[in-house]
Image 1 (cartoon, rainbow over the protein chains, first blue to last red):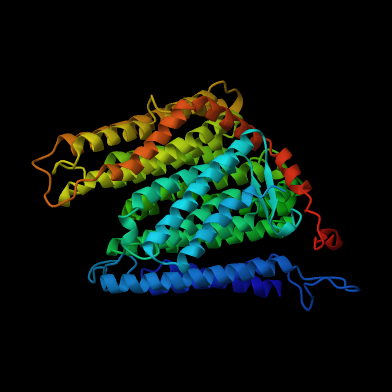
Image 2: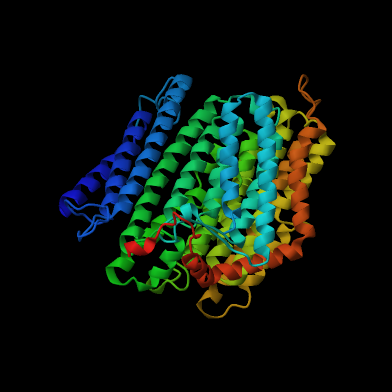
Length: 114
Length: 517
């Protein structure tokens, strides 16, 4: 499970960073979203991976899942959700203002190397 | 339990919420002034309390320290809160009846920004620091694009993207530290850090470096400063003036985390980043001053000087001695206020010059050349850190703190002296060039049809300068305060102890964390 988790986080982060480096705002936003997924899974795994364990203290139960990373992930999800929404608004505004979805607000030259 | 530490967070949050109920601009303005003046009073109160050695540990939700979120108001936090409130008053004065009508919700955004700043300065918890970073950033995005305009939107887009990437790094670093220590409270982290060995220590070191990267991104330190000139240049002047304290949040975070958590007592991780911080900051300082020399307009010049001011503070912090940190703490309010004043002067200069605006080339003369010129002259002296203003004392304190060095650090004294002195000289040259071009090389009459800036519009800038004069006049008490702050920072054991020993208030619903152990 740990290996699967690590590969999943790695692939998400790599795809996210690749998209983040692209010159279009839409790609950038998708990249940030993927990156935040990777980060959330990473936070989750920092509470140690366990299966079928409760995060709530009860009498007669030994072995718990760590509840704190779950709370942190919840906070991080809410924040990244709000940020993505804001970024989308900005991207749409920038697109309307400049007629291009290039991050620098202008079309790159068509001919010649980019 | 004294409730003072939570007031600077709750007050602007309350004001922002009330402003959304009654959305008329006049009542928003009135609320903004009430909240801002109360904040200033609260900042002064916190500073007065902590000057006597008081430290406020506030257990939010009445949970004992490592379990709940603790707010900590020590000397450094109180100073930052007071400085933020002062800048808030200046920014509000500059925005009043001019910039705040260019779009909706200027005042609520400003209040939320202040809440985020104060929260970041007062929190005693790493994850909570992340949350307040996000609060202040999301408000700053709103303030940045306030009043619209194409360059502002484009600058905002890049600023948001970069900061979201920074947030991702911050989260990875925080969860790494949680993974190896099982805590996020600064005091508890500090207490547990010495016990880390082997692989755990390596992971924590990776976390420390990622945190340093994020903080340097916020503080705009080389090589992560490239976002600042475009962003701050595009913001409206009052917002840019308030943003002068935003890079100081990064500086504050470095100072707090790398003295308290990764300080001298951190075992395998002791002083993990200190030798590097000073080196990076020195390179950044020199480079930003080159940038100032090459600045094509006054705003870009101000932005590069702002980058330089954060780098200068980090030189002092990175040296890591009590005296050098005292110098940085003393210099911090002065440099923040003078950078804010420079942004406001740039706006006043640009208004009368029509198309030429604040570009550094001959054009129409600025309106009210005597008054504006005098403000520019005083601000330039303050920014360059020349006598008679207090910044000079800060620079002298930093240079003096390097002097009686023995051991391996002695070799770095010469280069650092050279960097600080050469950087100051470059700043002086850049400002002198800008002033002579703007005020003396005018080619004809001022542009017609532009309202003369009233005396009231000069007031915010004059207020910033008055505060700088105040720092100069009360240099001795402030210097004692800075020295006590530095003493507290290099030996955080007492603070750690106090945070972890603070007991929740007794009551019928008092949580009992003992049952979880």
